[in-house]
Length: 243
Image 1 (tube, helix red, strand yellow):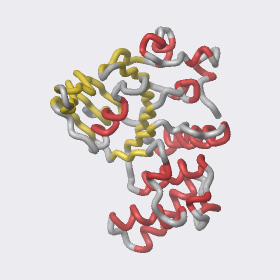
Image 2 (image 1 turned 120 degrees about the horizontal axis):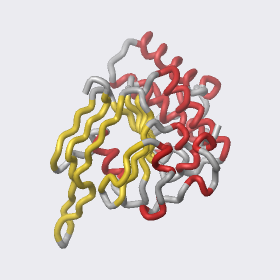
Image 3 (image 1 turned 180 degrees about the horizontal axis):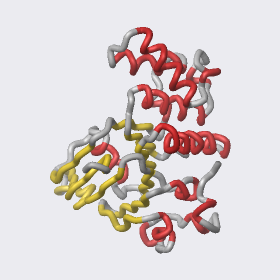
Image 4 (image 1 turned 135 degrees about the vertical axis):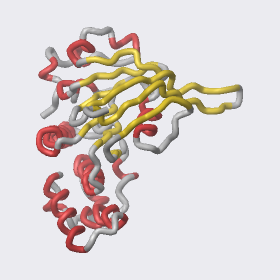
């Protein structure tokens, strides 16, 4: 586990339903290296959200084991559900106060994450009036303020225009290059980010059906797993980053 941020071994998750059990995840074995970027895809109902919840300690697996050696922060698909402060500055401060930092430390952390996410000029702007891309960046700022070494983005491009997607991808690029974060992107919009990936994972009906490099994954018939093939839009892996 020295170079792994996350190690999942034989993870299964089932839920009780009226006529028996629903198996959301079955025999998931996966290692995610520190300071890497992993893209996880799959059609709706494939198990992405359940897997994310287990990694983030929001759900407990039914069986199997999980090792996580960094703090996990989650950037939700709907940023509005994650933002509770009246302004960007106040929203970030809520999480910092929970860590019982001094006022000086809290002010420094807030200033730093606002700068890192390009929101310094929006610090005292009403959060509800931020653009979609700015709200996504504010949600990320809150996660960074909690000193998360692992950051999970759940459908980070949902409802964003081209400019918003570029803002999010620029931050992801900076997190990899400068902050040395371990990043997981859960998405079906592979054309916007697969070019970043160190590892590409496909879930289908609760099982991992592919795990490898982006180059290897692009050679697969992703449509059989309900995924739109990104090379129907772009021609090369290098084009699969919207910047």
